[in-house]
Image 1: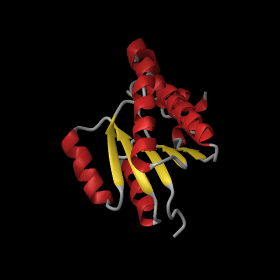
Image 2: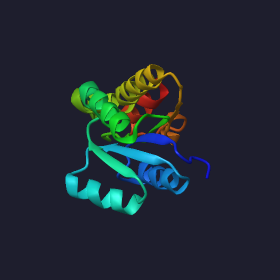
Image 3: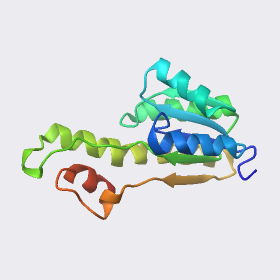
Image 4: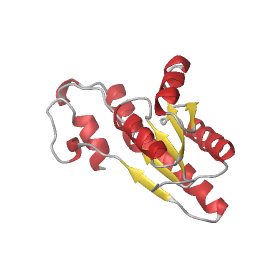
Length: 159
């Protein structure tokens, strides 16, 4: 199996690409820790559906302390960290002329800062362990093809 014995941290793992990534990683022999802001019941159902060794951590990528705690949990629970897959993303939609500052800020914090916080915490953990690792950042078609209703989302992926 391609990922036999690997330990992978996945953001946004309770739905969409994150969920599919978690299932694939486990099917290929990895342990995973899913980091998501879903409620406990959803997290338990997802862990059950992913199967294998799937840990969950309720956290928020827009909060660096939450991310640091999630990475520490994953390292402790899985016995290390070999890789990270950033799937958390989204945005509040609307026409450019109508988007309030707080919606723009939230979207950029989720997509841009969240990826940075996770990558920084994961890199620190992997460097401390002395063995390196891999970081994969998912993006969106909106990075290249902007919709009139997703200007904040597109900007956060083009930055």
